[in-house]
Image (cartoon, rainbow, N blue to C red; front, side, top):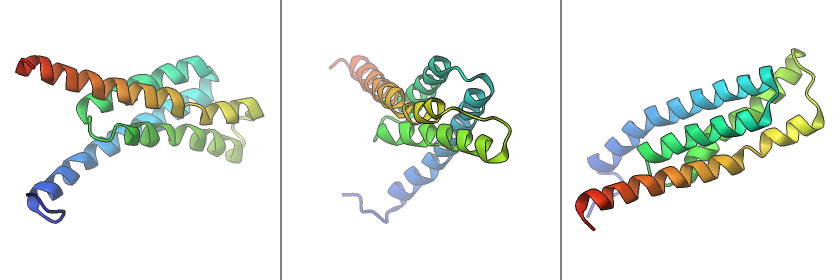
Amino acid sequence: MVGAGSGIEMNRGLSDKWFYVLAALAGIGIGRADVALGDLPLTALLVVMASMLAGILRPVWPWRWAVVVGIFIPLEVLQAYALGTVKPTPAEVYGSFLTFLPGMVGAYVGAFLRRATENLMQGK
């Protein structure tokens, strides 16, 4: 039995750190693209792709990838508003929060694909 403080558990956490960093960078990039282009369907597609990739790479707790990627979209919109670079409409602000939904779908589909592929490779 592996305890919470064992080396195996800590190594898993250390390796996940880089996936969190990559997911955060993807979220920041997608948020900046959303501010620059103002195209919500494109933003949703990018969020789905980033969350799905993270879900494929790390299928445990897929919701975390939707949260890590998705939290930066409204933060980038709010930053652009605060700096005065863009004056987003209320619909754009609310729409930026809705990117969590496609992010959840992407993350769970990615995790499902990873597990299904592993089961097929093992002959289950």
